[in-house]
Image 1: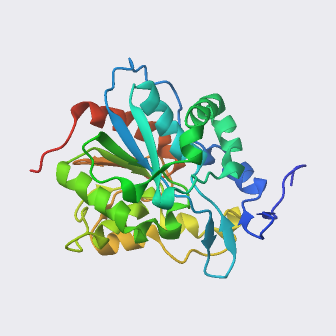
Image 2: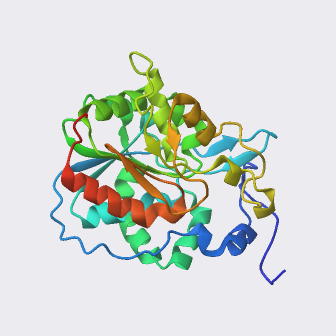
Length: 286
């Protein structure tokens, strides 16, 4: 093993663990967005995007270990960078108005992918909102928004599927046909629509991408310090979602108003696809 590489997990002061740099070295560019590039947009996008995030950072695993998580910087900031460049205003919201949590240990992947400067710039631009976001429960309707974005990372696995206020907004967006995008573990939040009036899963029968459960079960990578309790792919399938991707790749699928990407590899393509979906506007029911 080369100098500077370690199979040990990093550890926060409270004992929560995060991936050793070995995981990033072994994974290489699999840990980055594929083919990052500017979209060449003209900044003419009009309207506000509601970015629904988590403020949680401690994911309990099946073996009792705690994973230090939040939103993966590639999965939140690459799409937001493109949305900002396209001209859209961004509003960030979390349950309880908790500050947005970011997997800071994953920032080296942005440098490896060649987009660290872009991530740094949009993170700085949104700093005030990331630290003091809107409370999801205070958003009465979606009249002020042209689209919704739910970023990935393991953070959304903690309790986003249990947030009725999130489910109500997603259900309302679904009824309006409002362009909605999510990536990696972000689609776990779609499960919250079952908490809305009627208890229906809003995206039953939709084709979508999500981080594969099998990729969360690869101890050789030393990415997670234990097995997951909640498994997004399996849970979404049970609710009637049609999962399109088979691997941790850069697949992006748009089905009606919903655009989803399978992993951090898909961040560039998701950003581009979502910008195109926003140009077309709401999708009317067939």
